[in-house]
Figure 1: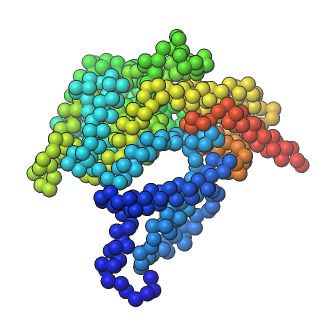
Figure 2 (figure 1 turned 90 degrees about the vertical axis):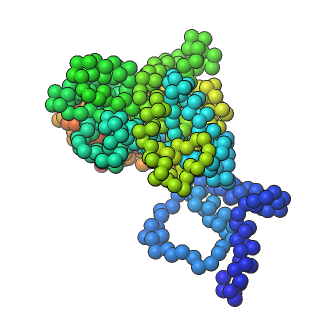
Figure 3 (figure 1 turned 135 degrees about the horizontal axis):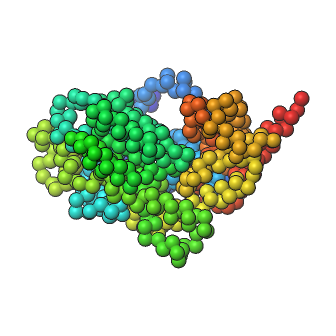
Length: 556
Ligand SMILES: *Cc1c(COP(=O)(O)O)cnc(C)c1O
């Protein structure tokens, strides 16, 4: 503003219009609704046939880094336009042609829960600051504990900052159980080993590093071609550790790996733990944390009548759902587990639940109330006594509860069943092509990883050699590039609104030499709008891209 300086009290009147009115005020309430509605209109204008809002442009981060804070106040209208502009280039996750990753379109109810939390700003540190948002957390925990098969009278849990946070809570609890709460006071005084599979999420490295256990103490066990932890390798690893008198703190199992939807055999590992504990009698039986952040919703099929198949899934889908469920059922054997709603739970970021079999164990994380004199003078629900977070938004818990009630078991059965059905449709297509190979053929979720091979190469035979023959490395590297070119071409096409937005993984798994990564094209179906036509488009466009590459390389 260049005009003469105003008295602050005048500016304060303007400033008040920046906030929703504290008391009912039809004019100001209308202004708020109008602002949100204008924002939605502006974003809506960015929608097109492509699965992105507006066009994507290169960011000029160098210019952005020179910005300084403005001197004057602006208007809600101008910031509204700016906010809509910042949505440009975002993928529309609900678009039938968005198959990029495990990123869901959030439901209207879960979005409304976030709006509720944004408006009234609950902090579930304490029910005094979160009122019924605290109840929502307790209710969501109860529903999920019963879904898992934990005793609801004993189980507990808290929403936290992502799947990484759920693993952090699990391993931290293991550490406090092992040390009788001493690690909290005296720090980590000894080497403790954590065991997980090579297909588990890299969050394990953060957890080991940030908890001070050291990522060198993380032992990675190979996974099988089904992307689950190799049981013989796990047994050999654990025996080796016990024979060297090492302390095994925790085993992290993954039920639904990020890239391929591999599912560790939790029942077999729980059984192995029991056998080895009986044999070696370690002072501490290793803690079992299940990273089920992606896989947990498949538990809704526990009540599905697979014989009558009332929802009418195809045979192939039905088998996939049933086999997945069998691997998810033993989740109740884990000491704790992680469940993300911002993945296969269809809520906005971030909504993750750390669920624990025995709520009483959480007391090991408690601080002395005397250390927090400004809190907890009254009220009944005080998770802030033990949570890592001080400020902990109520949004995640309410959004989770909203989706659990909105969708129910039936809704999750429909949306997950549909995603798997679409993925099976793609697999069936790809399997009929001699130039294509589905890499995670034995995994049964909504994600398909595949590779294409040049003319004259038998895809199945080539892939077998990539996995088994270290001398095949030059071909493997060439085929990695070949697939990358296919991906780039389809990506550009999708951005023009002419195809499906796929994803790419640089390293699906290591090849025969144990080092060189096998790259893959990836389709992850999340949207309820994705249909058979979209899956046929995937096949058509990758074949088209491949044909172009073949023509180009045939030219002299
Ligand atoms: C995404 C993911 C994580 C990490 O969760 P964030 O919410 O991204 O922190 C952990 N484990 C698995 C299997 C995941 O897919």
